[in-house]
Length: 253
Image (cartoon, rainbow, N blue to C red; front, side, top):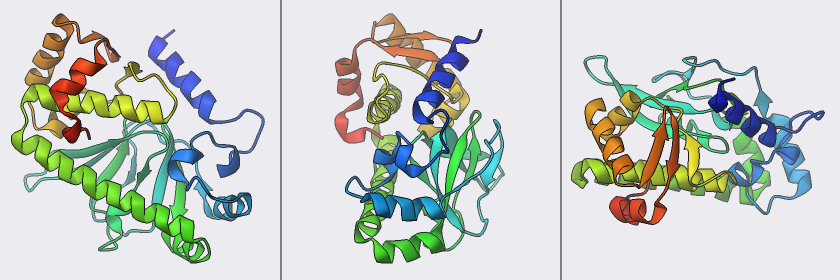
């Protein structure tokens, strides 16, 4: 049995309740993508507009850059990659998204999605039609504030990425990504120190502005220095404090 797949299945089971229809009210990720103070009646109203479709397969697109903006999405399971195409048609990775995180807000300003989004592995999404969300937000002020906060977080992340790519060394960039995934795992009540990287080293290098060879050298160096252990895509952070020092908390993505 593929142990990484087994771990993924356990993760999916922990988010999605057995013998119940999936809803915002019984989803363990709701505290990440919903306002904490939302009343039960308001959660039911939101649940009425959320659309849940079949799982996406690895490599399948949710939407493409330039498509009409219609919805925002909450990742329910799996992992997602966002990217843009450069002038010569090459992919430029702009982000990775994990369960409980919201994607698609880049389309709000121009009514067109600014990124293409596809699954890194089998993934499930909750689709929230934006016009319905706007209507609901007018009834539930906390919902509107929450999505303003999410948009602010997106802007902050973009600014941190620009800083990371313009000033930091390869070691700082890789450490910052590992610390970011660790922190995001902790928010989902998963292990901060032991997890599977769903993206390839090519995608990691693309995102961090490094060659795949440089990513591999840095990972090997961290391994030899006792900061991490790596087995295929399974990674364990042995010295989280040292990685934070290398990354610098200000550059955590």
